[in-house]
Length: 217
Image (cartoon, rainbow, N blue to C red; front, side, top):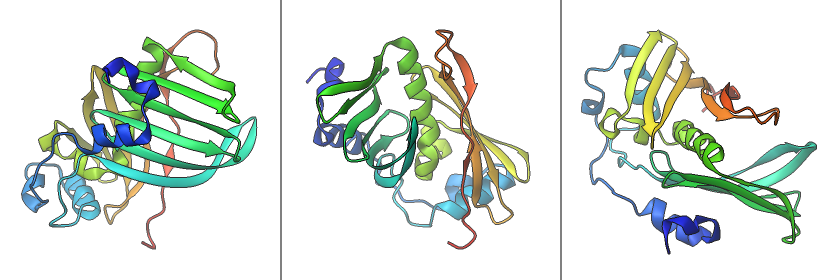
């Protein structure tokens, strides 16, 4: 399979590529956090347990509601390697199925109704740049991939606001995180290349504010 054939890959193909990428046998210790600002150390030390393998790829399952004209239920599976690529494959309302994807600098999406009628399909340089931004920002789901050893630079604006800076391909990522006094993530925002109003004019847009309440966990 060539790199240009991602659209035809099965989930097993994506799993093989993203879950079996370059790996490290190292486990997390506090030494990974040396030299970082205190709020960054507090956050990463809270969300990564000692001894956890320094994984760069993960497979996630999720369910919820997505707005396609109106809110509809969905179930999805995501294979994610934040510095390299992802596929988000979902079924919406039981009848719309497809995926958003990014790998090797190429992004795209394809969604069909009942497996026959195209509901949405897009690719090209703008879509690829947008997908790279999503790929990188969703590294928040896999904090081991956001350690400095993997090319991530962290900065702290104050005790409750920290930012992760890195690249996915040539796309810059700045994930701006709000953390609580306990180090838990409260919310994250980031800019993403896009044309949300479908004007034909693409540019950097402030992405959605993702919020999480982890007090009870």
